[in-house]
Length: 164
Image (cartoon, rainbow, N blue to C red):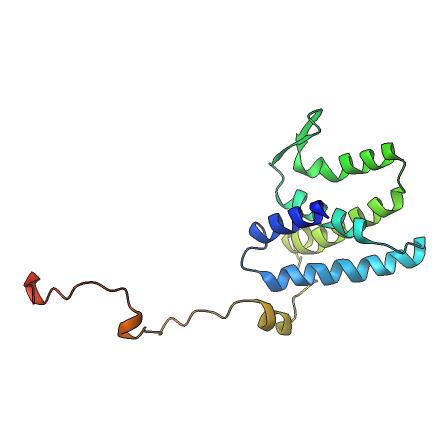
């Protein structure tokens, strides 16, 4: 739960700052993809896989962040999902859950960050307008002039600096 909160917050404050609809779209893409994968490996609880997807996307979008794992390992952020996979193996947990989270995270990263930047690439996963209307802030009107009582205040100095 702490991992989910931490990496959601870091994604929202970092790569998804001001793009709440895209953030929700990542959640939808991840959830649907994991449900499809879960049918093939017979998983009932996908919370850990979802957390690992968030960690994977964060680690790929912040590649130069240095990490420290229990004071033993120092590495760059893109290796964090692999370190967590190794730790999960050491604890004797099912590897499928971690691999599904990493696979879905990689699919999202590839579709959003890698493929559109290739020659002839385009955005495959587009955020629907309804999500943008629901979650993103409306654009600021450049012609908006605030009312006098809403403007920054101050003393009326008059003309040419004469105090009135």
